[in-house]
Image (cartoon, rainbow, N blue to C red; front, side, top):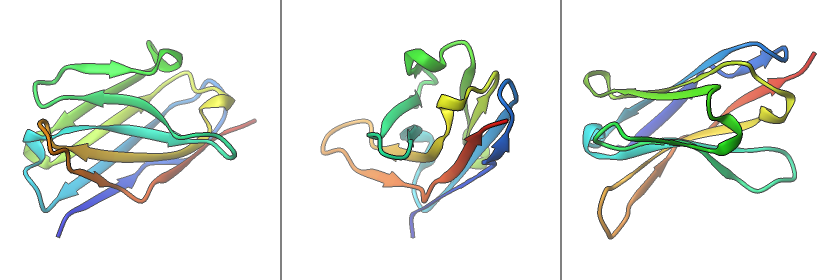
Length: 118
């Protein structure tokens, strides 16, 4: 059974840090492109960061220099280190995994809430 389980969300003050984790099981994690989306209330979901099976990364412009995505294939886990958090980073953060070639297959986590507020 495929599972993606996020953890690490919470309430943090502006300027603070959080580290999100996503534990995967039920598929060959190391061969998948994985990443994080977020969705703020009343807004569309946006892709925050992605890391390929070759460890190439890409980021949403507004988080570049503040967020770092990484993966540990030995532990089937991905991470999102978020520093210098801003109120606009508030949202529900989802991890996902996608096959590297068509037909694309997506797996999704349930999400973890991040609230940046003083």
